[in-house]
Amino acid sequence: MDNIETLQYLFDVQGYLVLEDVIENEQVAALNQHIDEQNLPEPGKGQRFGSAPDGSGFLQWGKPFCDLLDHQRIMDVLRFRLGDCFRLDRIYGMYMRDGMQRGGLHADYGASSPTSRAKHGEYFPFRDSEIHNGFVVVTWNLADTGPDYGGFCCIPGSHKSNYRLPHDIAANPEDSPCVIIPNAPSGSAILFSEALTHGTAAWNGKHQRRSLLYKYCISYLAWTSRRVAIPENIELTERQKILFREPADPHRHFPSLF
Image 1 (cartoon, rainbow, N blue to C red):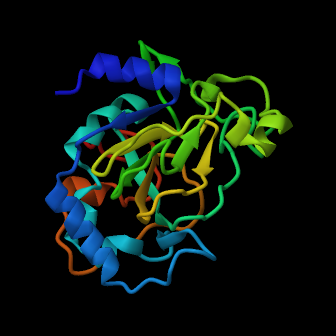
Image 2 (cartoon, rainbow, N blue to C red):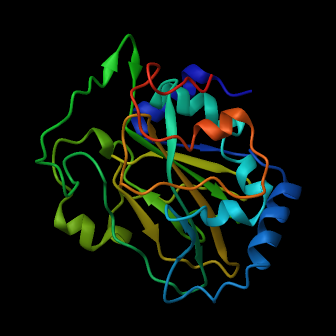
């Protein structure tokens, strides 16, 4: 069983966590089979598939994708990062083949974000020994990723930096020791703050990279005016349905997920 105090500490200092053995091999196989059935074009020109908002994205492809929405292993971590009231903001899948090049390092919040000079809203980030993020991403790995292959990369602790990402690191992340590619085998989940400087490393694996990204945010926040739609003809639990609600003030207009 995960030690929540340890996970909270590691997420705080690193800006990310890797939880291994979260979904079993049979579940990984079922998810990959559903993806195979979509007859997607070979990865190359693009790295993404099944994106939403604007529809349900890959959630419409089968119940196994919806079962990940509130998987118990991630909910405890999301709770101490986002509080009791949060929603699903965006989803998309990523796939890569051998030889595909890296993406750029970036952070959506903090000193290195494009909106770093925007006026902050009414938001108190540290309260009663709880540190809350506005957005947290859960990346489900349906194939082995890590230093030998590529995939998710980041600068641990960069979510706390007060300085913009230096050009030398941004231009040459593969030559910068501070940029790491954490080992995250098939069936694992990577959780990270959108304030963390992160990106996609070049893919060197002979197998295809496949990852599913679920992006959650505090109930009153939103990335865009568009919403992820509830998938049709797939039965969801009452808690899962809450994740699709419109942004609203926690507790008063948006119920607790717990």
